[in-house]
Length: 199
Image (cartoon, rainbow, N blue to C red; front, side, top):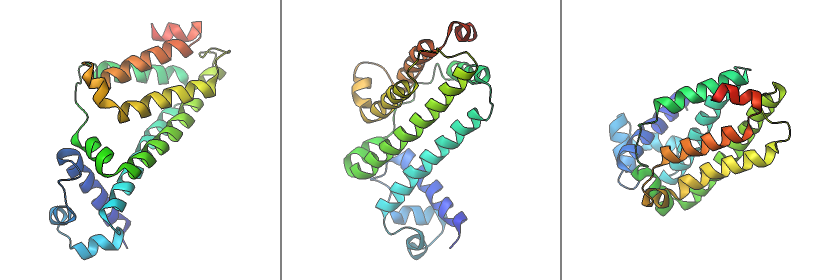
């Protein structure tokens, strides 16, 4: 079996699911787009359910990779600077959560629940590592409960994905929520020295 072929199937399925929703995309559709047979598809995945689960898992791995890249800077100042740059670049981004999430919640609740759990654990781990790094550099408050802070931030993100209809019902979107939550989070964790970087 080829890992490249498996990755190609996951990538193409992700593109199609994101654009069209999971429910409306069949295994036949995916195979047709890739120019492969269903027999080839079933070499790598027992079912569409398994494909969805592995797609979500690969998304978590991608997020973890990006978070690890930030940690490798080994400079909390650069982390704060990167966040500010990212926040400015996306301030006018009002994209809505796609059909993908609707379908996950309605038709793939087990895979969605597993995805949320994995996301939560991954984000909690990296947020704790970020904060510990900032603490060592004197840029995070010394009296901060790092584990509880990481739990709260990871929980906000997890709940936002699950309850995005309610957020949008109040006239906001996921990106606005993310930026507001991060602004409150950053201001709450930084020391006086750290705030000089953020102001």
